[in-house]
Image 1 (cartoon, rainbow, N blue to C red):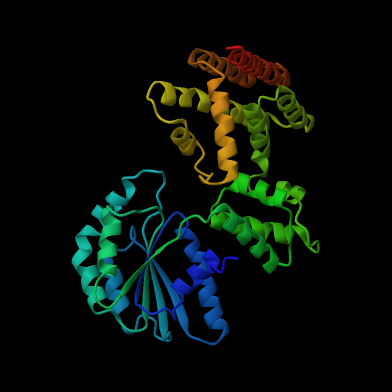
Image 2 (image 1 turned 120 degrees about the vertical axis):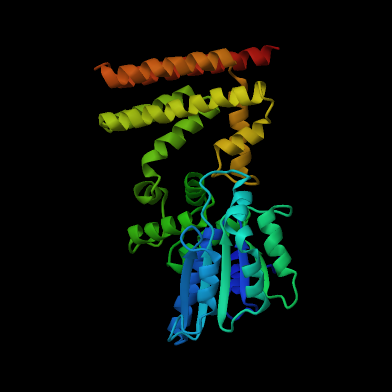
Length: 381
């Protein structure tokens, strides 16, 4: 049996003020979760009567010179005996491998000497935590700069990568968060939560808190609770419909649409439902171009389209296989025709009184006719 500590315990130890060293550089896709851990550390310290204060900085608001000057100031927190200063890089808005390079060039390069001098003689009683909320690896200028500081004499700066936990670890963490709140649930509910929210720990913790409050005195969190209170509830039909489109089940797609229409949705909700259907077909059309014309591997295309799914999950593998099968079922010309048909339906939905259900269901029949025919043809070859 493995004795390895859970990832969150290791992270808590790394950011603890008791951990020696005046500096910590944190990076990785889960680095934003550091905010939650730090507030827990401060709350624990205050609960024990210790004077500990947390102060965040943002590099788009203050530069390094100002931040380091305040860090050296002995009266910055007059009544605090220990300080945690958190320097935040801007959060990336897209998956761009050049973002870290630009961040280094714009936010670090002009202040390299000041940062190096700070860690030559860091002030007592100050923990400086530097946070880059994204992946980094050797060879990246930002990573190499802080790695060089960490390798310097005295071990005055440490590195901590907060990467997405493995699926089993993530599941165990969800159960642990529920237990802390006196709750439990089933694997099916956990899978539904992960499928909709993805592996982002900040979002998952928010959803777990809402589920715990909503369930009241009940000890068991159900799938109905998830659908009722979580932020993604209004897009749940999109996930169910996507499953049907990928699995090749016309009947299931029609059933989902029928249940949706039976709720008497208003015009905006119908447009939103249709938009989700359109988005999936459009993604197939774009992916077909990427794979067949630009020779991009299907997995790479899929990862860009589904950034909330982490490679290594069984869910990732299942969804990738279903998407690949669906992609092979259509030619580029057929997908382009379907996209044009979606455009015509969209115009009718917004400019006429025609029955929305009939138009959507007719399109689904056409979609599956093409898909099923292509599937049969491939079996005959």
